[in-house]
View 1 (cartoon, rainbow, N blue to C red):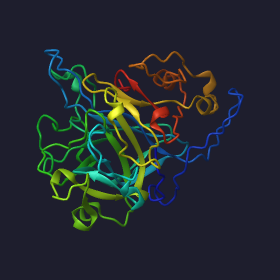
View 2 (view 1 turned 60 degrees about the vertical axis):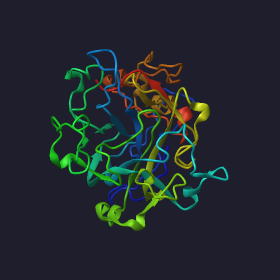
View 3 (view 1 turned 90 degrees about the vertical axis):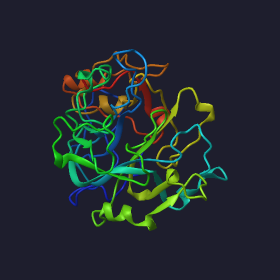
Length: 355
């Protein structure tokens, strides 16, 4: 689900599509050691769960995403951010659609509604490796009274933590282990005390700005902001940064399972041609499917793959049948499917994949 950005990598690298050769003989290793790295969104979990102490209400303080290097070379992300498109939810009237198209796509940008998180430094993701970003408190939520049904974010690679911008204590406790140099910075147009990402059906994307751009300055420049959703009264709820399309690395459009027929696209087809499914309140993840042929053809994976994946829910699953976690413990390197269409690239998983 991505539009590749040539600005993403350090000068020594160029970002390209993962290029594992696919053959009809999965027992024949075909991995090319020069295969480029490729950053994708592997998993999104923002829907929360019921409170463990009562079995009622909502525990919404545990939100995270996992990025993944889907190729054979290390990737350095510089000057990058996380944002969501407009409108916030897919099942409301979408006035950004004009004559059947999202008007901003033709203008070469995508909205970052109400604000975003960004990291002005650089981080490196190793080949076929996860990179965890805590969108809320970077703590072990399983050890909290009401969050015991959730997951552990204490060992995240980056934490969204900027109390000068977002200071909701229920959403942003001090990171347990993530050091200050790995805290992402917040930016907002509203008075909200927490980043208002949809817990029902987010349209998330990641981007990387040129290293010549200082994001704090760029975001503060009113020339780089606009009002979306047909808002002529200029409400801050509809104010958004105009992120250039060629900065976008990857994006995932999700629809709520119960409102698919009422939903419309918020991400352009060049970023995501379809949509995945999502449901809040059950600790479900939107989880990327495995490219079975490319994975089987990678090095000596064929002898390390574990089948019998059983984590899919709501009638969805990974068609490959490969258990990524068990296979990785066996030493396999996983190649995830990336067709730029979440309808076939993602399924609903019953819990966070990292334990």
